[in-house]
Length: 550
RNA sequence: GGCCAGUUGGUGAAGUGGCUUAACACACUGCCCUUUCACGGCAGCAUUCACGGAUUCGAAUUCCGUACUGGUCACCA
Image (tube, rainbow, N blue to C red; front, side, top):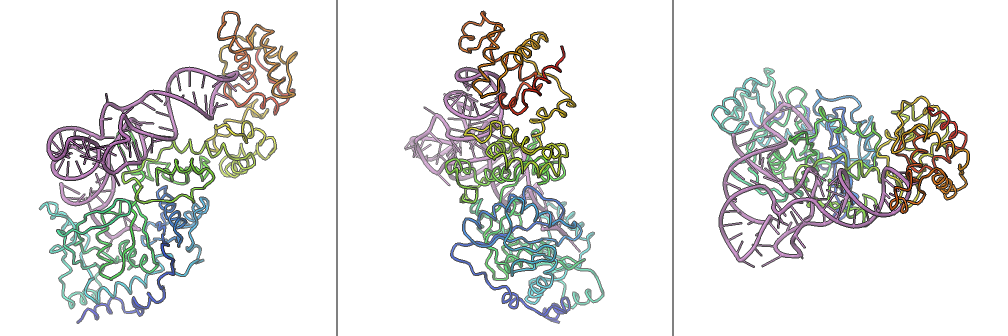
């Protein structure tokens, strides 16, 4: 009995070997400095902010240096797999405009380094595992769950490091005959990597974000192939896939740092060049005094669907992530206002190495700026798309009269210093409902009177205004009318004069304007009143003033 | 508990031995501008970089220790 015999016993059907696959997937033809990155989500039916975060870095790195960005479906955990999960990831990437160059979806494959789906790569993994068995660096392990638990318990009790290594690696010393015999008798087994590392020896690992790290060598005989479906574990799939697909830069979350030693040993054993690693900080959240990883269970904002539902422009999310990716991004962007985020040069070294807090306030601010710079047509279209999915009410209003809707949106827009009052599309309704008579009528509202609250005075102001001073010719004459109205009723029309001689007046033109505003919209804070009045027109204004309680 | 990483204001952070009386942005507060709200402008907001010690003429920046926080220790990725 030889290693070769054992390998053949375990993988009787594997005919191709490593060399065959390396021929089939030759080294990529890259120009100097070009990179190959990948986003490798597992299809759990959920698109995490962190996945987008990493994909964005992948994408930017490729935009910066040239090369290929691909998507690999890491579906080896068949228990957790959810139908349509990769579609969700792809759709999201598409929405955010960070499409991979190579991918596989609905049976359609783009790119020549596929399959881009791990369950379809089983044979390939088997060839690599077979090789490992042949050279005596992998072996079948027959330990049961109970045995493993017991081992761990003993280790904890004896205060030694837990894990399947050294003398605790029970199955590594089984003779080939014993192994063959057990396999033949149908005992379930996994394949473990036979480590030659020494935990007490250190090696230098250079992470592109964290810098040089001194890590202990791996000495664990970790599992590389599962028993039930014969699929590889992450560690092994990482080795095979990233080698064959030619990944130059692996961008993944910091939670992978503890397994780096395993990966390095694996690459070394095969004599493959390991990719460069960018371990990104985790996106964290603060809850009271506790800081923790964004959790998909507890935090709605961990899911990309959250941002879609609220109606944040995708660019706002991207820009806010950019500020986390490299904190000099904003400064760069204000200096280069015509550039897009794709023109920015990403530097892993400048990335913060502590957890990144995703700040929704910051997002809102960025989003307000982006929305304020949209043209009325853009905003109409974007908000319509959103409303079609999430707000029938708004959708109906837009469809009723798109021009009128754009007119409302255009108040204090398309000017040098546009108004910034919308952070997400679900806020639009709050800002425009009073511009529609039927909605206004039905809307539950309290008039936000400020200063002047007497009903008689309010009625006096509105009726005098409509009778004698109403004018919509242009903004200047409109405002002159309000000034004259103010004076005729004993209010100051000149603010400076008012401030100096308050006792001479009942109030100022500001108070009068507020009355006209609140009486018309019920709100004390609205955009420019002249434009609102122009859109509404005299008749409707008059009606609203008349319908006020006497 | 072992291993690894991190710790600068309310938040994200810049900063790699003197140019830092700690940049920039968000948030907050005040003032100015203004018919309101906003926008914009100005100003304020860490005498100090988790704590203790060491090195140095000089440290947020180097070293050691402590504390705290996070990650990880699966036939999950």
